[in-house]
Image (cartoon, rainbow over all chains, first blue to last red; front, side):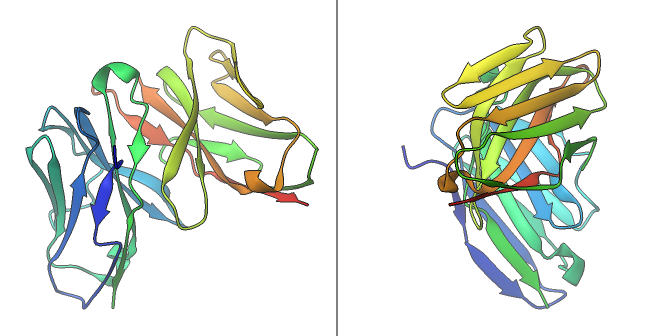
Length: 114
Length: 112
């Protein structure tokens, strides 16, 4: 298996623009997580899905952030409009629900908002 | 971090020495896990210990869990330069919507 695939790897955008981050989980995994990593705040859980259904989005910072999982093999995290404080590395991870959430991470998307 | 800390924040040792990293958390947990992150990469799962277990081994890794103190430790024996990375503990919260929450991580440097 190719592992969790995220795209793009790097994104530089101007403040106010819409940003869409993409994730393809490992085939067969039924839980998907979006995390944000910064030096100041560490790894923050933004949202996670079980069987394509959002279970907990309490970590989504504000209404500018939204996430979807239209099917078992694809998820998006959208920021609209983007702000400089959104600059971070965004990770997607997937796991099997019955594996005690042993998570497999993608390589991350480094987002810079200027 | 969202609900816990690793200790120390950074550790520098010589190759061959043992490295011990500690983690504390604040909630009831289902299990606790340790992950490793090399610079610029995603996290890699190392080991998982369930809440009813006290100690677990995997190769050069030994993890302990004390649920009464809400703490865990990761011991890496006979460290190698290739062990240089950031290490994170993470736990699956119990009750309500179970979720995987990470500590802030600590940087381990193993000098050859």
